[in-house]
Length: 245
Image (tube, helix red, strand yellow):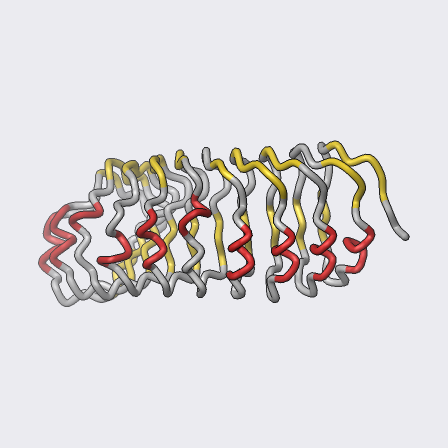
């Protein structure tokens, strides 16, 4: 595993141990490396609860713990203590619990990847202040709730991946107004209502996945005006007709 002595290298700013066969957990002594800016531990066999309270990295910009066996939950003060965090990847672990409202204090966040964990609640309630967010990847969890209209304020959003959760309600028309949104992945949820015609106002969407929901009504003709669209999956819904007028 990662030895406690790692904490002796107090001047370390960049630590990359990814893509190895490391086992065990993250030693508490790692918190001694107070100048750490980049921490990559992805693709190992690391396990145990991640005790974020030992993380003491006020300059941390990148934290990648993806594809391990980590557990635990995101503490409410993660972003108060790491206000410069731009890239947080916890994908493919056993993390659980709700996403705390304090996550919105990561105002510099560019990529938030929480996919393939056991998170619950509505992650979307608390990210409205993340005006720099480009990649929101939270598929394959137990998230629920609606997509709030405030999603329309996230003008830098490039990828919205909400697939394989329990989100419900209508798909917000505001998605069509996001200027650089390229990938919209809403498959395998409980979305209802019709496809908002406003999506046709998009000049950027290339991939639109709404498979396996409860979307009904007709497919609006405006969809065919999205000149950038390359992949469209509306299968396994309750759509009744095309309207091409």
